[in-house]
Length: 441
Image 1 (cartoon, rainbow, N blue to C red):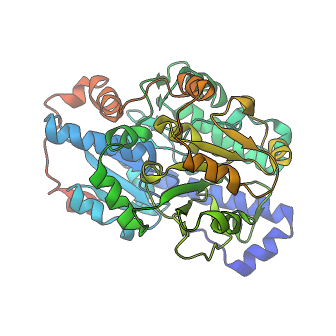
Image 2 (cartoon, rainbow, N blue to C red):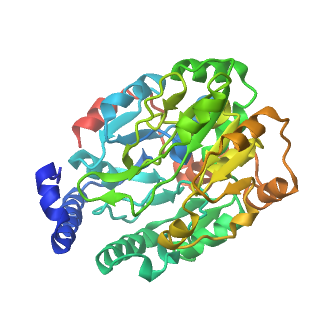
């Protein structure tokens, strides 16, 4: 729905006012669709989940979903009906077998908006689509998608965007902040930053109990069979060291026609020269990236950008190379080496609205020039690594709650704060009514 062909995008790209008109039409179209679908009444035992705008089955929405399933199965808690929204729901049909009763809906479709109108609870990690508005009796759980290094939401300086983008984003964030009821938090730092950046209402609850998205880092880190299964799934050898390269996006590397892109430079060639016999590289781009440099280095570089659960990649990696991505906050829970390759530091810092803290506090060495980093990588892989004082201090500040918390979070949101739902009014079901529900959309 509301999609333009490539030729149309090429024309629109040349004229800023046409870009504004296209964005306004996009928002208006989805706004009208959401308004039409608001007619559906709220259904008390229904939850809708989405992650990264329907692109993945991952992050805190996944962790909370799976924790809720465990509570229902093992603890005998009242059952909810659950919906997942995906851009390509046909690729996630396995969830319906693994978790009977789970329903799938196409992200941005008419049915998608109907589900949001009906669901008692919304769980997502990104700003909601235009047209989704909360009604009385609905609860919005916003998990966000990582501890921020670069400034976000209303903390971004006004001069960082042109007036068209600023106007559009301001409206969306303002609307978002008014709807949020819960946010999950891994630290006091995160709670303070996110509450201010989103301008949350005073009665919006910050659940500072840990970050559900990190659950599997604590539950599976010592599970040798699980780690072997990940390597087998990706197709990498078990006897080699694993380097995870996970750079973030750049706002300057974007065009209206093709979206965001990333150029990795010579990093893969440099690493292969000195490490091809002893290591492999997992290449993980940001979910914004629609096209990136093709490594074309079969057997050494593995593009895992489409792999849903990034925690699996953390678990099998011996070293993380990143730049400004929030992935390092999560990876640090494993207390493994991190190398920060910030080859465009000055331009990026200016372009991306500055940071929340000085990079000298990062838990690893920082390289601020474009060059061969293989000597540093090789040294980190070969030596016995132990977190130093700076690394430990980093975790004390940003990861003070290092344990699985998904079940605690799910219990808090879905049961303890709503005794009416946890009582006799909620029916235990096995998914047999799913077809009837789907037909009612």
